[in-house]
Image 1 (cartoon, rainbow, N blue to C red):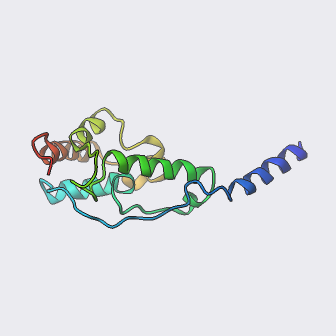
Image 2: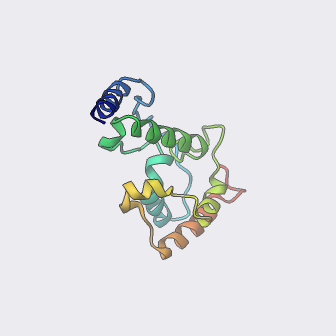
Image 3: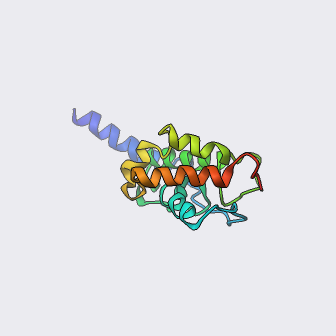
Length: 143
């Protein structure tokens, strides 16, 4: 048993040197959408800022593999699909789907909320954010 634990510990140390997910940068904010209200923006920033903007706060655990790989992948994937910091300047910006993701309980990810309880919205806040996202990112508002 001690041998297995020693091997696992050694493996944990070795994987820290794998470069995947080590680029913890926040590109410049290029443009934001025209929000329907300051309240919608505030709720979005409370629950979605780390994965859907260029203003990610990288916590200490995001520097420890293999957790770092998961965190990095979530942020990069989140920015690819919907990034309010590059509004109108990227190929995909699925703002029109943001409210639907929230309604279906798909966002924020449960794993994110476990690590960031401050991002948890009340039922009323969730309803307000859903409506605000619909108002802000309606299909005709792709600017």
